[in-house]
Image 1 (cartoon, rainbow, N blue to C red):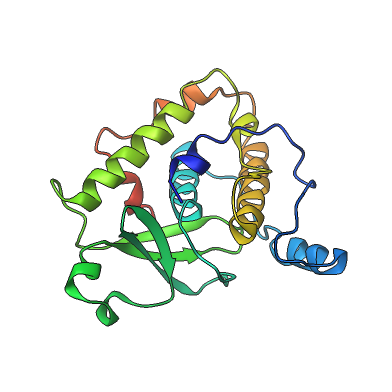
Image 2: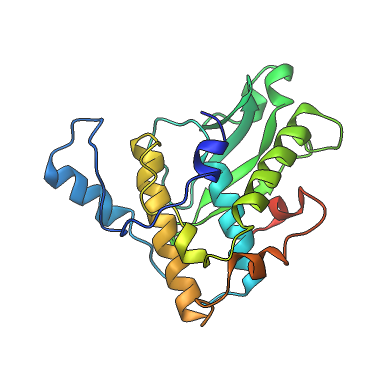
Length: 208
């Protein structure tokens, strides 16, 4: 899956709308997944923290994975074969070629945002660094609008697989709640954009 699939998504669909059922889940299964992915413990946050969590979460949710991430569990993000991939396999268990694409350890927080502890593999002039730079550019482009942050949150990213779509919607609900608690709802994305660091990998250093 290309990172632009999630980065370029702009949705005005209400958060409670989950359409499509690629895994053949019944209504009860969908409601159970919806409830289990509900953000918990959302707090008011600084603009820098919200922006960092939005960026890191969008990066993780742009990756390929076919399992349900658990809150507080270590996951490992890689850049492999031209795409992002989230895995439960630690880099020590991969070949040296695979380890070269290790981005960092990702953890899903109870408020449904993601944090990343970046690896030492992130360095300038590498394919991994170039890929992160392109993702950053796409994120900056997404934020270059007079719309509010809530207007571009991925409440219903219909182009994503089931689990990514479920957690993208949860992310949207979480950030909307944090922005509301912090009285930041009126800010345009361009106002948020002024906080983006010039060093493109800096946002990956964010960790709660």
